[in-house]
Image 1 (cartoon, rainbow, N blue to C red):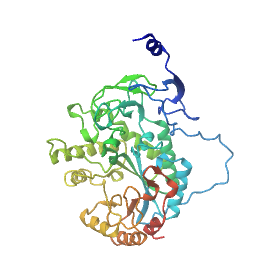
Image 2 (image 1 turned 180 degrees about the horizontal axis):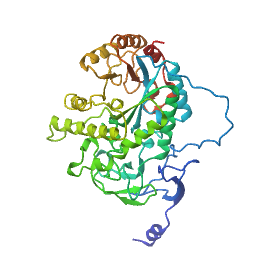
Image 3 (image 1 turned 120 degrees about the vertical axis):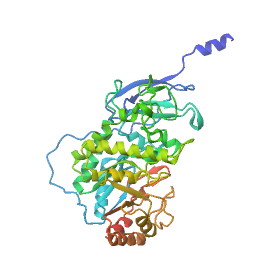
Image 4 (image 1 turned 90 degrees about the vertical axis):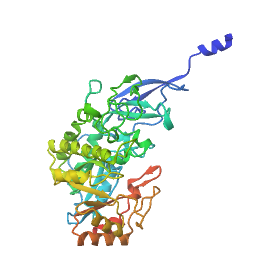
Length: 445
């Protein structure tokens, strides 16, 4: 090596020091409770930490000091008359509280009285307000996929159980926001079905890499096989390497690792809804599925999914949730006969929820096919004739919504809700874009 090259190699590489949020790893905002200073290379080499491009979107401005009470303003009250209806927004928790309050007011004013909400979902993964950033679990750091189609890409790593290194696993800022939203629903008389885990977040390879059940400090990722990870402060940590029981891996063999790592979730969620005073139901997982892998039989994968729900139901019952407030939802290749019906035989009061209809034709067919189940509009219904978003999801037309209400009344069905396709398009979310004509038609307004 010539002397010029040696001198060039000895030159200090340019760096920059920024403040990052110790809890999210993003650039620190004005309201982040824990901030650390960290130095990054301006032009990082492969394997070196990358300068965060996004600012923290989780921590919001703290409440103003108490002021003298203004004249009381009472929120609108939901009509509990059956059939109760609603339009769901999967990403509700990511929006500012004031926007959520306006949405819930609009829901009630347009005849809605039920709302399904999702606590731990991942998507859309690319947005600053992506669902995984609002996980109820604390983020422990980042892991880098070592191989395959996502080799070299960095993904979030969570902690899902109490540990010596991280203490309690909860993202308290997000849980506090959930408490506020549930209280808003209670004040308006809205019945909430609160889903803990969104099974749709485990169906695609990219979504799965943001899912706390599958990628956490306790296990370091069901697919990645990694042993070390980057902590939120940039240092290197090492996890436990034991399977934590995501649906894709069952219970982790003889260790019963899911039993070891998830028992606190039942108590946490039940305490949360009870404290809010809301009329609640709890769904352990929305549209949970387990596909066959290798030489597995259908009976094997059905058994894994059935046991997963059985364990989660027991957690909720032990935490004090009444049996008739627990909702089971499966989809995909798994069979109702081997998963849901045995659970109903063991827990006769739990609610079976089946998703799909967004048209009167499909609704009537589902009511005949899944007798006794609660039918929800949450699928790609080819008969839906209303608004269709860029994901291909179609809502019922106004005329279809009116006919569906008549079916609900004739069949004595207590409730029905569909996904509000107006608020989500490819690459953006806008709660203010909610469309209410379908809700008014479903509610008979």
